[in-house]
Amino acid sequence: MGYITAISPCVGCGRIFTYNPTKVPSITINGQREPICQTCVDRVNPRRVANGLEPIVPLSGAYEAADESELFE
Image (tube, rainbow, N blue to C red; front, side):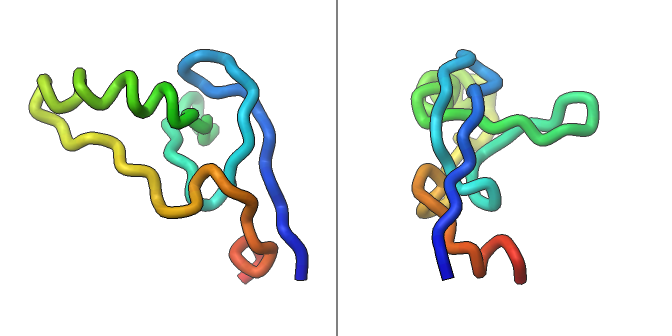
């Protein structure tokens, strides 16, 4: 077994970051899941709470490498 890390730009800020593709927070744009970095999650959460929405809480390990068994179950 190995580990897999996804790398792509954040949909919010455009910064390249690494993440676990099965756990990273994302939004859907034109039918495509687009990942959001931890910095953008931290930036948007106060606004979400102020608007009565739940904060985004990334899953444990969202910004770490994924064990390939998570991806191919």
